Length: 296
Length: 265
Image (cartoon, one colour):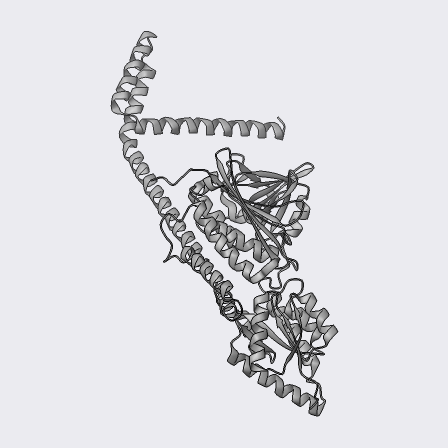
């Protein structure tokens, strides 16, 4: 016999052994959880069957072994089940903790001090030169802070309508600063306003579009926000025609945070896709299960 | 002292910020003549070369060209004063050098101090006719460039952070943090994420050169796996090491050449 033949035989023996041991443990597990009543029933069938073929020994062995295993294995199995439950509880606890952490991170990453300082400076400047514009920007800032500051956040803010409102306020302020370098387009049908949508995700995408897409571009450009329903999914898209994405640039905490929160909230049913359209710029799309309104 | 009025240039990408600085300057230094305003770095350099102002007020973050880059082209002719939004990095950088800077939003008092200093310097220059060692300023600007513009990417070479995959007519940008593994597949390379897979033309060899070696490990001739995505390593009956990856039902084989990656501690 050549070496390869020996190897093949060894492989076969190993596989056969593993199959047998797998079957045995399956039988063991079944015995551990099966009710005594059902076990008695199988004994009865086994007795009848082996009695009919006039060879009672295998039946007797079966009854003896299964009785012994059942008595011995019951405790082990119980312990296993308890351990599993404990692990699951621990997992749920971890998951909850991570959700809380992600929420905290989301809350903290909300109002950039730069933005606040610059907006206040802008209002101060406009008071001297254009008081009407100052009043407008001031009102937008209040709207913006009302929905971003965690202490001020109202209940029921997690709808697409509220998030769009917040983004409009933010973009209006940015327009006052960037002037004609920032154009804005919203295509969000009214009926989608009541659809649940996690807070601050749209805002992060818009901030990214301005910071990484339009601010570095001399002539500026357009931020377009679109929402539509595809099959059973709500798609919310933020596109800009800015400088695009440098493949060597870090994707940043903002996007990672959105991904993490989507994963925690919706599992595999939601996603954040980033793409660069042929015309240039960048598009970010959040996809999640569409509901007409929040469950009561 | 010359009779010619002192001239200045203001560069900031946000018009209201330019307006603010201009009106503050008019308050604290009414004789200063603002000869040009630029909305980006490129314009700042152009106008700076055209008007040769005595002073250039430059915002640091501007599109096209940063204020620091613009300053490196203008400092030999004009006094540079940087304007920056609050930023601990920038403040630390400026505290180390002797460059002038203003914190935005600019307060009238701070601007008055800066202007007094500028006036003194210009007078000194007019009487002694000695340049304030421009190479010194050049060095400081170079240092500022490395401090401020290359931060966040210290010495480390720029690794690939996004994989571009053609999907229909647009390019999908897949963050390396989403990727579970790459597997070469004859002509293409398969990119696997939690919910999707993409085909790209880049070969595994090219990817290996461009990706962060601490982020992705090669575990097989045809497989690169993201280290953070690895859930467990086990041996199958034949003694091969198999990897389980979070979010993917299958298993990945670790070849013998790479099994040293997963030796027990």
